[in-house]
Length: 315
Ligand code: ADP
Ligand code: MN
Image 1 (cartoon, rainbow, N blue to C red):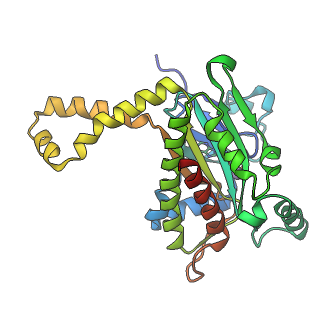
Image 2: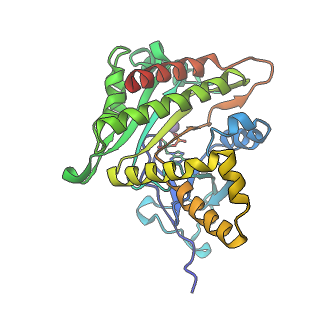
Image 3: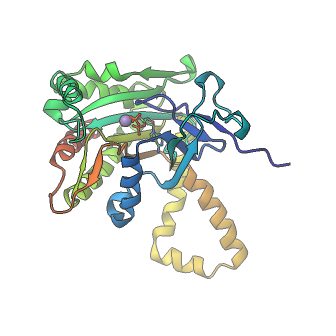
């Protein structure tokens, strides 16, 4: 018996619109999207250095619009109201997949948050938010977070869009501290993860400096393992896997027989699904590839600010 594929509500969104879904396994998210985001993902195939920092794009789905109260089950074809247009969703790899207690922070990039398609009233509204938040001075703001508070509370703390709006350029480091140091993992681990995020953000920065694209209101999405035992276990697996990077050790492995290689592959695949932390760029509803226009200084400003904060927290 094979159960029919089910689509469920995605519970690890840190910000943004309602209505993000996931597949039954949790490996994929399914997000309502605009044609522009699909086009950006499709064209990203020609920009592999950048695409490495995007979720894996699987394609699109046409979902029948439904009453949210009846979600998450998909209606059968016969339930579909004939007049309702189909909504296009984008199918992406889920960054939080494989984490036991993913802690998530969405950092929205840019001092300018609107693209040329935005009507004047929307520009004015987004400019007003930028002016009174860290978006203007730092080119980024915390759009939302989710932090696992651990054994005692046994729950997540949710920080909505208003949380990140309370900070100034001088105080926003407290928001980043809250993300890493207020959960269930100890400070030494939090510091280590800050260092790993800094290293990853540095790589993103290097990529953006060599790309000709424009993103407005895209985000850096940070995820780390908030379960202390799962984190410990993941770090142990990382350590065990490290010797394989030694060219001598790899040479020895090549002499293994096929059976052992298969075992190795299985173990590595399981270990690969477990991560201590991850970072990707997301939300390309207002993004374009813009050959000839040079790097995206608006987004780079924010990425540099984020880098400086994680460096401070890792020191
Ligand atoms: P919007 O802001 O337009 O609603 P986003 O693309 O920013 O759409 O997605 C909303 C939220 O969903 C993000 O803040 C993030 O927490 C979550 N999310 C989006 N894409 C992924 C992904 N590939 N993996 C995990 N979470 C995601
Ligand atoms: Mn978003």
